[in-house]
Length: 38
Image (cartoon, rainbow, N blue to C red):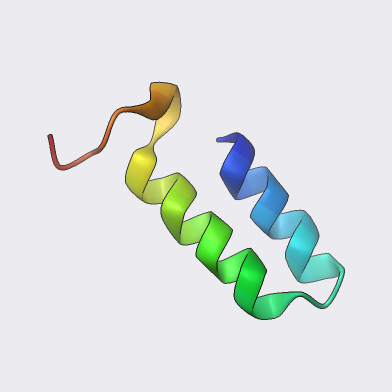
């Protein structure tokens, strides 16, 4: 969840690509660091 929040802040700072990457990684990892695919 922290990665998603960091990604949103990156978007506001005009770091679009980095923000999108952080959000995607944060969603893939999921809460507690457990992958949604496991």
